[in-house]
Image (tube, rainbow, N blue to C red; front, side, top):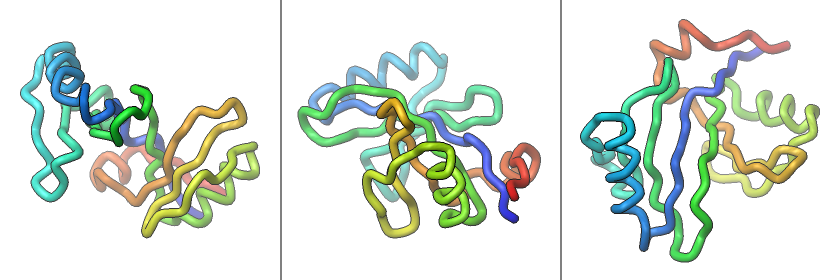
Length: 126
């Protein structure tokens, strides 16, 4: 058994639109973006409920989009679970997986990002 939850909302912008997009969504949220110290391609934008909101700089020319990250304490088990629901693996990364739902919407299965919220909100999965 493992646990998982939708824990992160990412607002993706290609690098040429990242600064404008980040400023816009920070204004919507009423926060100052908080750059991730170890990765300049991410900036925190507060929360929606218990989910973290992040701006993400993607590659030049990639389409802007919003995607969700599912946090899990057992990534292989959660990937297998969502594949069983109809997801397809797009790419395996070291420590996380990019997938698409049956309609082609991109999402990721990632390690726990916010332990306190995960402990409080994650659902136990068979």
